[in-house]
Amino acid sequence: MCKCYLKKVEKMPQKRKAKKSFGEESSSTSSKRKPSNCNGGEDKAPSPWDKASVPQEPGASINGEPIYNSIKLLAEEGFEDVAKLLSENGVTSKVLDRVTEKQLENLGICPLGRRLEAVDCIQKITDRLYGVKIVNDPIHGHIEIHPLCVKIMDTPQFQRLRSIKQLGGTYFVYPGAAHNRFEHSIGVSHLAGQLAESLRQRQPNLDISNTDILCVQIAGLCHDLGHGPFSHMFDGKFLPKARKDKIKHEDLSLKMFDHLVQRNDLYSEFEKHGVTENDRDFIKEQIKGPLKHKSGEWPYKGRGKEKGFLYEIVANKRNGIDVDKWDYFARDCHMLGIKNNFDHERCIKYARVLEVDGELQICSRDKEVGNLYDMFHTRNTLHRRAYQHRVGDIIETMMTEALLLVDEVDSMKIPGTNGKKRKISETVDDMEAYQKLTDSIFDQILWSTDKKLAKAREIMMNIQKRQLYKCVGQVRPPDGSTFDKDKTVEIKNKVSRILKDMKSDLQNEDILIHLVFLDYGMKDKNPIDHVRFYNKGNPNQAIQLKKNEVSDLLPEKFAEQLVRCYCKKRDKASMDQAAEAFSKWSQQQGCTAGEAMTPVKSSKEACQTPALSTLPPHPRGTPASAGKFKSHLQF
Image (cartoon, rainbow, N blue to C red):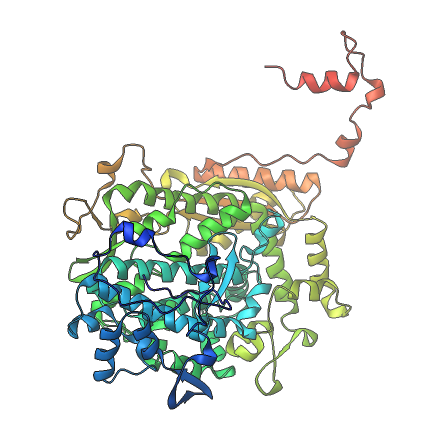
């Protein structure tokens, strides 16, 4: 491999002699090579890699920055024949990094191994000259970040993600869940590049270019730009109640991406790295999906059908297996302290693009089917134990109530374009205002002095004091059926009528009903049915694996629903009445009982606990308190 190192060092290795053909060099020869100076080897002559000594293209610059003579550096790295052919065919340093293995093949460069080494060397030359940033990530280790991605990261719109919790209200349940959208986005970008590069190395015939990989990395980096305060709380709970139109965070990510590029004037940076307007459409299509779609036509315009598999890397609409999930599974499990049995690195190594029903899809090795089932089981576990946790869920509900109360208050309006003040719910229409909206709004309300914010301030303070609405019951609908989301109000009204019949003082507004959906990512369908595999004997043939061909221990159903009832009043009498009414409703519906709720002792019961001094002495002379403790351990 060429000696193009990513780390910046004072002295770099001398130019090497011309390479031998791929596979020609023996291991004994390679073992005699002296280590380069950057690894502690002997002193070398000054490196031709120092920018000051690299010749520039005459009169060539972009945005005032010089374009270095990368063609000459390529020749000095032992690829004189490649550099000569590229120059003869009009390739300049400005577009060198866009050269693909397929193009080198068309120029007559042989064999395959040499073409791959040349492409690898070209990439590292570009990275070295224009600056690759290396960050240390707790999940993926040292990550190399492309210079254009660095430019995107170093903007206020991207840095805003440092102030948005990845798991929203779950942080109030799991103290370790303090990570933010910022590091998740970097992780997704890294994995997207790894998967794309892995496919290019194993299948050169796919003609994956450096620009393709860069666009996939940028899509991974920017896919969550549109998240609001406390992530899914904002677009999943607040916006549906504050606005009539349906807005998803993917829509906002596209708006924020365009705003980021325009506000920071990054068009020249994109041009410098060969990313065109069509490539930017490709980036946005990966985040959201088809921007325009006509039946019977290829729905994307960023890339053609021959590269349709690239759309499955960041956000896979076909089966949900994508690098976005791979990162948040690993990252969230690490921060939550929940074991992750899924290994995304194996998925990358065994990924292969094959033709399925006339389209190219990313497939996996047949022996990896168990690993993929583990992936979806991990997803279900995270939703059940963390994302849909009943306490985290109600905390986000209380936050939503507070935001709805302050939405109309003038002091909480946010200045946007031309200084126009926007309500919180209106900021999604103006990215200049939306970029200022982060988790900090919680503290802004909590410590406000505006009398109009008193009710919202009380809710936020109750969250801080852990005076939360109490979950008094949780059941599952009968026989695997589900209640539609619009049935929530109907269920609440029925429970309220039961309370009225019980002569309870609880009102309709004191009761909350939440419908929780748990699945493997495709509602009641098995996502593995939408995955294609290959086997060792025939790696070019896509096959389908049915569940009964894998194991008899896999789940029979892939989705279920939970119905939760919360009571806003915290006194024991009110909670007992709410629990009884919900229990009666669930019996009428034939629901299956869910997990038992933690009983709450009244203050009177708590005071009735006998003092240690009044406990009788233990027969063996053991202290009374220890005797009481042991009595709880009897079997």
